[in-house]
Amino acid sequence: MSIRRIDVGPRMTDIVIHNNTVYLAGQVGAPGESVTVQTQSVLDQIDAALAKAGTDKTKILQAIIWLADMSTFAEMNAVWDKWVPQGHTPARATGEAKLATPAHKVEIIITAAI
Amino acid sequence: MSIRRIDVGPRMTDIVIHNNTVYLAGQVGAPGESVTVQTQSVLDQIDAALAKAGTDKTKILQAIIWLADMSTFAEMNAVWDKWVPQGHTPARATGEAKLATPAHKVEIIITAAI
Amino acid sequence: MSIRRIDVGPRMTDIVIHNNTVYLAGQVGAPGESVTVQTQSVLDQIDAALAKAGTDKTKILQAIIWLADMSTFAEMNAVWDKWVPQGHTPARATGEAKLATPAHKVEIIITAAI
Image (cartoon, rainbow over all chains, first blue to last red; front, side, top):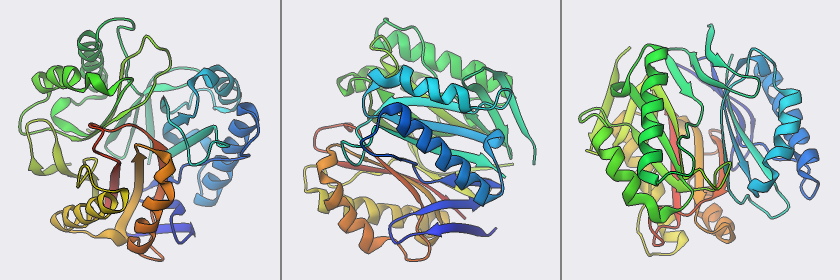
């Protein structure tokens, strides 16, 4: 069964497709901005990556969310709740983990169906 | 290929099935109780969710375990070891991550086969 | 659809195969050694586990990397960048998480295609 890779970089690939399932690299965005702005940036990137893969946010299977500081949980959720499609919400888990740089406050790892 | 969602909430879904694979939301339970009690609660919830999906703990593929405090690793493992079915243990990884509230000490993210 | 397990232990299994997808247990290695040495040890173990599963590093779908201390990100990446096959890099995410013991500095969780 073949593997399709989109936006291939030397260290990682942004979008990997196998067996009707899409694996996205951990998405981060808008470093240094507020959790609200970073979360919206991450979700916009997820929408764009899923579109390149030929799917969309109604087909997300699992979302793993890492917050650099769990005290921002409600702030992240406010943006998430407006974005996530009702009736098609994914399995989700959120844990606190420092990210690649202190300027990064939220990272989301998506698995979706095609 | 169709996606089946069970126990759909506005923020996340507890059970998502696609391609003969089940993705569970991160399971937490018995906030404020000991790691022993919380781990048992989490494993009971996993059993219940897998049953709703039409599968069981002999078909778990991967378990990601987050402990709020890694010093409770042995306490969590004592409960896990009694529960996990011999001959059918999953791939597993355990890392320390603060969870949604300080009252939550253990969270487990399950991927299983149907 | 059948599940195949390789190197089955009482607590976890090192390699689980289902639906043309391989799930590896979180790989750690060379406890107490430098991040450079531990990362190389982890990557060597991943190569060995993928070979047992009948696949190789050109077919990795997703890599989740946990570092006990994110200040070692560049040191881990230097080893990763030499190992990862160009044109076949996986989706990847890296977060900071303390591991099972303080002697463990890096853990990598792999999902791959057969």
